[in-house]
Amino acid sequence: MPKPTADVTEAELAILQRLWVHEAASMRQLVDELYPSGGASAYATVQKLLERLEAKELGRRERTDGPWQFRARVSRDELLSRRLRRVAEQLCDGSLAPVLTHLVRGQRLTPAERAELRQLLTELSQEPPTRSSGRRAGGA
Amino acid sequence: MPKPTADVTEAELAILQRLWVHEAASMRQLVDELYPSGGASAYATVQKLLERLEAKELGRRERTDGPWQFRARVSRDELLSRRLRRVAEQLCDGSLAPVLTHLVRGQRLTPAERAELRQLLTELSQEPPTRSSGRRAGGA
DNA sequence: ACCGGGTTAGACAAGTTGTCTATACTTCGG
DNA sequence: CCGAAGTATAGACAACTTGTCTAACCCGGT
Image: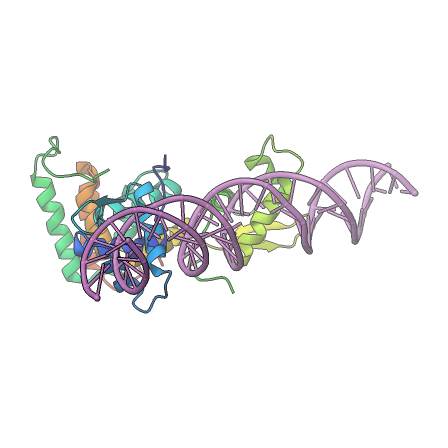
């Protein structure tokens, strides 16, 4: 059982990025894209990485006529959520609100970005705050 | 030279947390707090961790009459910034704006939190380039 | 001189990470 | 049928990280 907090390594992330782009891909496709000049072992390397992604339940393989097809099991958004939650866990006592405040305060936002955020906040305020059913809130 | 992106491990973070609380602390103090029932080697463990923190330029030692005094060289805020930047780097093409949007959208914010954020945004819009004296302008 | 605290250098096991080797299995052309 | 080429899988491997631990060292006080 892979720890729920299982982290994604650089190489694994590179695979995921391609899967997010392609929806589904074969090993050959991934190898060609990620290790274009890769030697003989690139294939097995990608295989191992996909294997680990599967173990972490971040990827899935699918049978087809031909070779296996691979898909991501988490969206970029979901992964983002996990990372942020982890950061909050370690540095903000588990709460994400301080992260938000920190970001708003610390980043020099362009007026356009500020406006967009205010707009977004306003929209969310107008939706029923008690029923948070419709939208996928935060994933997990 | 340690990579600027040098990561902080769990145990190192525990040390930093104490240093953030205490401003400065001796080894003994840290050992007693972090390994209260720790065996004979706890001292050396903490030493090694502090050594690594120093190598990463995240901590500093200071001579005093008695034993060394240790201090953090980064604030929690700064560390938060680095982590967030890294996340943005890996998942949002380097830009933090999507992280912000994601957070605002994904977290169930209480009305109070929303109000506070809107307030904050308004403030920032009104005094753009001025480092106002009242608030800490720490981030990044 | 001895003791006990502080101080330091390094050994170490366990785990992670990316790559690579070896070996199957499948399938298609000749 | 044989073998070549692509596909599939298991496991070895070196390099690195991480937290702990051992063995010393130095030095002032009694």
